[in-house]
Length: 588
Image (tube, rainbow, N blue to C red; front, top):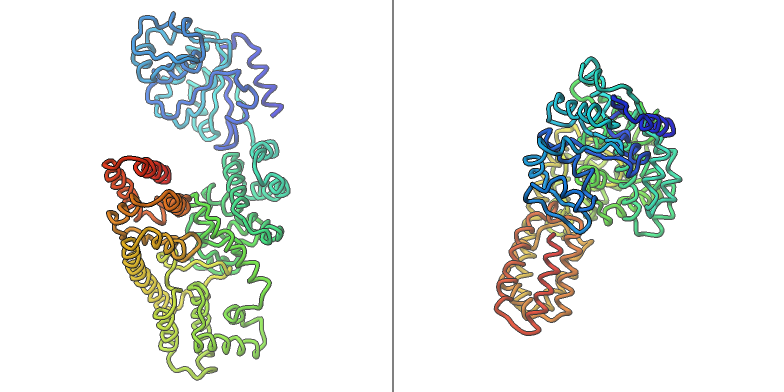
């Protein structure tokens, strides 16, 4: 930073330089950030990204130079121009109007040289380079300006022999990321600042090992980590600092790799261990992107660990969503799993590490689960089935089972008919693989029988979810007819956040007219309960994601409520108007 400041100061000291200073660096390295920190308000900044013509650039430059000037002073330049709107603090000039009316006749002649002009994003502009460098030459030659160009290294290399740059640029400076300064600047106002300071060296080391110099990626990653810590609500979880820290380091490696384009989101699904990555890489048709990450990190980061589950990481990195419930559950499951007894399917997965009697005990444990019809979530159940197929011949011989399909189907059918475990939050999970928080891929993933059984379970999940949604919607419609209080009691017990119905669009079939009439006749306490219910249900952007099917329903509910209430009067109308405004806020 000191070298950059010295170079810029020396350049600015030249009153008539007749050449531009070019500052280049990798994308996201912090060129704009560094120049802003060096010059502050002592510059006229223009980004040409998104501008269509060189006249737009002149207009943008004009606004940067004169937007905060005294109105009379500006008007002396443009007193012949109409359609200019003046604000209290300055002048508000539509870009298109300026470009069309002023650029060619006035703006080019009133360019200031009291501050350096900083032109950014040339490599992302659609404007002809001849025009851009013509503007720069005009600023240098005619107006004695200091002009600083911010470009990427790739652009600089691609234009190495361009006569425009050779003629215009007198000095080139390449900057690299100053991670330490930027790191502390980015986290200055974060709630988890102290934790992030403790993580600083590990995170910066990951950036170095992955050869990533982007401060933009660093800024986004630190924001994501801060949000993860904000979502952790359980005090006991927070006290397990080493586990959470390990999860954050794993998340950081995956986040950087995805943002840098080293891996795709497919690599984040059912992350395999290094050994599995290595073995799969031997197969030319099954190359694993994570193998290169393991190698670059010197195998020091266990990417296979599911402290933060696949589903949580994909929510954050693919959709930008931070679900507090899922984050807490994922960490809690991992901690409980690591501190408890080894699950029978894990023993079978690692049969080469156990004595015969321990393996036989694990087989018997699975058999007891199936015969007593013990209920687990789908991820756990699939691991049990995977373990059976993984050592199918031994399993069948040990328990004298002739047909594994019948044996497994009997258990699955019981769960389907008698439990809610098939009501999944995400029935169509990524790549038809069900996510869980246990930290293991399904070891029988290539087994045709296992694939068939997994597909059958997926079909049952879809079927069960649809049937349950229809049934719940029907019950809810009947309750609304009986009164808003019963409806509120029902949604509080069944549909409130943190239940199995939270992310299933069960409201889409509720009769809007009936609900509207109940709301019109409801009291202010019921209105507040309804508002809070919808606020919690949709507060994480669910209307654009998991509950998108409810979006039209909710919008129609507000419109119909508005229409019916327009014919009301008195205090009741005012109360419903207030409710409508609150629901509209939820919809935004």
